[in-house]
Length: 394
Ligand SMILES: *Cc1c(COP(=O)(O)O)cnc(C)c1O
Image (tube, rainbow, N blue to C red; front, side, top):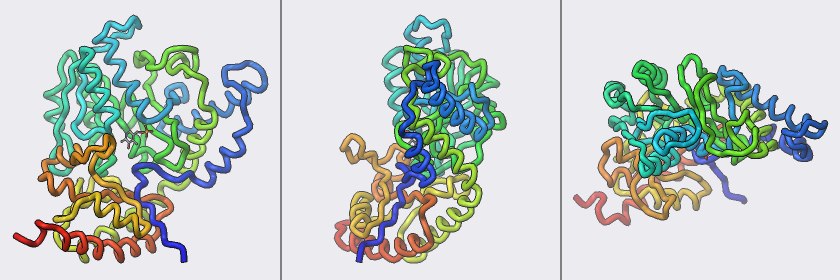
């Protein structure tokens, strides 16, 4: 009998939607350069434009406000790097102010870019969060100065799922004369987004988090906002992102967005109930657990939980032996076992941060998956706790 496989790591990446896979297969042989004027080029250009219209209408934007980029990370780097123009005297004439306000719980592609820009003369303020992962809007207001070029606040956190009040944060930024960006990579395709309703100037999305291909994302830039590209060269993307378009990736992103617009609403209700069952089952069957993140303002697909007396990495490996894929809060990226910067920012003790795992649900998950996890997890936790030298030996 083959082992059951349960994928609960959709915040890291998602499997291709079968319809996207089909579209990609069909589009694979289209090779024209979208910048070419002949029929081959026009065919590719048509496909790119269709995808652009899909993405734009999905967020209430105009097609010309959507730039295709190489990843969510590139989109975020692009927005913050326009600040570098002000700090380093870039020869583009679109000088922005050199101060960035962001949060302590952003994705590394915001935090590391901010760090790099600090070395190049920008100034960065990191807003703290409360125990649920929410920023303080008053602190945001107080941190914006005349020198603030961009405020960047993520819409939904990838580790704990907490949603920020982006509309209000954008309003405050504008009131004080700064532009506003949101990293919406985790929220895009899970909750409805309308850029006009939110009032944002920039918004980042990524295809591989919504059952699309890896290595392609979209950046919304509000019409009229001054903009210096991160990648200079040809006139692709209206001169805002050089390089021959990743036609296939873009077509895949367009299709994945189309599928989201068809499936998102029904799926949300189903995932909410899976999460509730998972959470209640853990609470009922395992003592000494904490749920991290906000109780209500959260992505329903994300459940982050800490277990006293158990390391997240051990839990992950034992679950993996049972065919269950989760992730830990720890930033293993650099091979370091530092506790998650997100969990630490919420002010929890370091042991609790180390004892956390993230389960992120998606369209393929079923109630049987949840029952399988609830069947395996309690035994794994007690086995790890039995081996612990600290748990239960107070
Ligand atoms: C995954 C993710 C990114 C990075 O997107 P890539 O396309 O993988 O570069 C950025 N921000 C958040 C919140 C993410 O979850």
